[in-house]
Length: 326
Image (cartoon, rainbow, N blue to C red; front, side, top):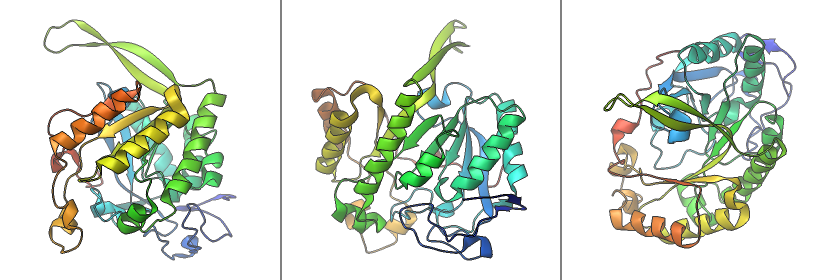
């Protein structure tokens, strides 16, 4: 646990156990954890982001802060340029606090923390400081789902919107693609805590605002989430059966207490295309596969869902990690 701000890091005497890896790296002594990062805060981009779910991005965008490093290192990662760690700009806690306030000044709907797991306690400090200086918009925790319940509990008063992935239900698939055979066990525990926190605060909450429709010059009402849980699941090529198991689990366990985002945007990246491993991942998701999954979701009664239409499997949906806004 942090005890005071010290330059670019939060002082701590413990080895890192921020995520289920519990790698024990002494990150604040300059050692890299499994995530690929030391205790220095490293950010690769901080700008309004338009490509999240409509209740997150709306018309003005989500204030996305992309952190370097990741505790999963999925073989097919679409943000591999930053997830391996070491990319981006090192900043201090005060700068992180200022970034949050600058994004709010850009009229974004929320602060969207992307891959934040290994900076949990630094984020708690920076958000608290920003709120003292006028930060009002919700905080979104946008993660891979492989989280420690201890860290999630520590974030109770910091996070308003939880946006975890639920990548796998099979330990074999999780081990093969993310070297995390306990993924579902850990992710389901974390999701249980996230959902309980939202329910304890009064449940999911939206606000409605009017915005101009560019084509007709008429006002259009849009809903923006202020508090809640959105669980993302990205269909992988040839994995419809496992995806159905995940959707059934989420629906039977949480019903309408959560929203489910069913994603088709899998894109074969160079690390897959240039390798002899994982030939099954060298193709995009077929339209028929995704349609079958969406039909299944409707058939079992899922109502609170987001689906993707058109060709979303494009690298253009991946932002430039050029330190803009950092």
